[in-house]
Length: 65
Image 1: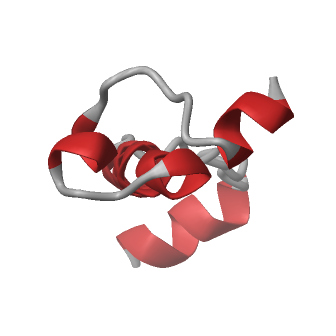
Image 2: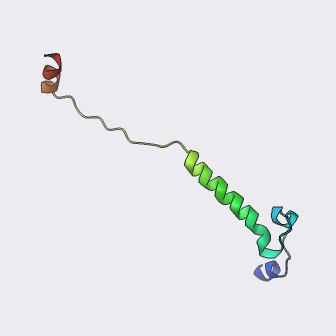
Image 3: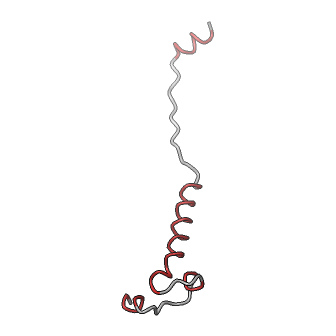
């Protein structure tokens, strides 16, 4: 497989359309996948743990006074 890349025997893709040859033709695909992966991680909703503390009766008494 790698010797095929070195001789420029790579299936037609975005890189070959842009004029890249050989393994360099896969660079645009790699950049796009990396960008989409990072965007997916960045846009993913954040899951945060919520903590609750028990209410102590003395706190209730202080709040009502």
